Each structure stands twice: as structure tokens, then as C-alpha cells.
Image (cartoon, rainbow, N blue to C red; front, top):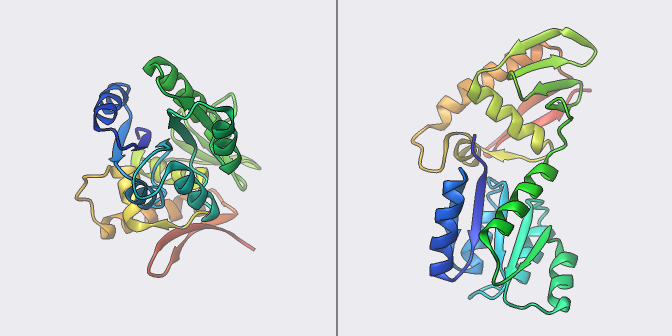
Length: 230
């Protein structure tokens, strides 16, 4: 599953240049050219990183970032701006930006900062393991196992793995069906929600098999969420 980046920037020439560079690096990129549409895209919560310009029409980057954080969206944000004064950098960081890059900048530096944020985004152990509750997800072999009984293990399919990793990364997030499909199968997919339910059913059975102390529960009219068992 490729990392998905939302680029909120009103300069068409810069968007085109960054789009080409980021796609070449293997990232999936969505572009929004003003603050209002950028905020709407951001709030779907399907993006792994947001690159956010400051000076934009409709809403500036500070306003977009402030609203994102006020609504509980924790997606990492790199701010881009021609406003190089230290005050503006401090303002962006205080509002919840993870990094701040003044224009002009080199694409090499931007890519390095993106990679650094992705390394920080998820708490992954040196042996490539993610943990949620009493279950470990091995990123190398697509297996899950019980931390108290490693014999309780099972292999996941690639899509089952992608879905469960999404929940491990955002354990308190309610995933809307459409956004989960876009995250796992891609933005332009024709994959349907009925088919998603099949994959969720498979995952539930495998989590039961390994005695997970949490479950994937349905949130009526919305989607799914991880819920700890009593």
C-alpha cells in the first residue's frame, strides 16, 4: 500500500512539479488548489501526510491547520511558505504543524523531510512489529500473533493486512467505508462496500482465532472502528 499525500497549494506550476517528483518516489498524490477544498480533502482522514501552503485563496494554511487540529485530525503536516519570518514558523508549529519549509526549497530536502515524518508517524519496533492490545502485526511476513501465546498466529492476505494496519495506525478512528476503500484499494477504484464487508468478516474471524482482546465493530451508517473487549 503506497503512502498517500495531500498537496494543498494554489500555485499550479509548483503543484505540477511536486506531483511529478512525488509520484516518481512512489507516493500517491491528491492536489487541492485552495484552502476550503484542501480542508475538505484532509478531513476524509485517508492521507498519510499533508503538504500545506500558507498563502492561499478561501482559507489560508494557518486557518486550515487550525481547523484540522481543532477537529482532532492528527495527520502529519509540512507547511510551505514564502513567509520566512521566524514569527510565521513559530505560529505554524504552535498550531500543530510537524515541519515547516520556507520557499524556495529543494525537492531533495522536501523528500528527506517527508521520509523523516513517515518514520515518526507509526511506532514500529526495530524488528518491524506493530502492536495493538494483545496482538502483534508483523510487517515483514503479514502475520498476526498473540503476545501472550505466539503459537496463536495466522497469516493475512495483502488486503487484510492493509486494512488491519490502517486500524493499528489509527486505533481510535472511525473509518468511513468509502475512505477505507480509497485508502486500501486506491482513489479511483470501483471496489464496492459490500466486498469490503467480506474482507472485514475474514479479519474478524482471524482476530477471534488469535484471541484478540479487541474487535472490528460496525458503526451504523458510517463504517468501522476498533473496540476493546471488556
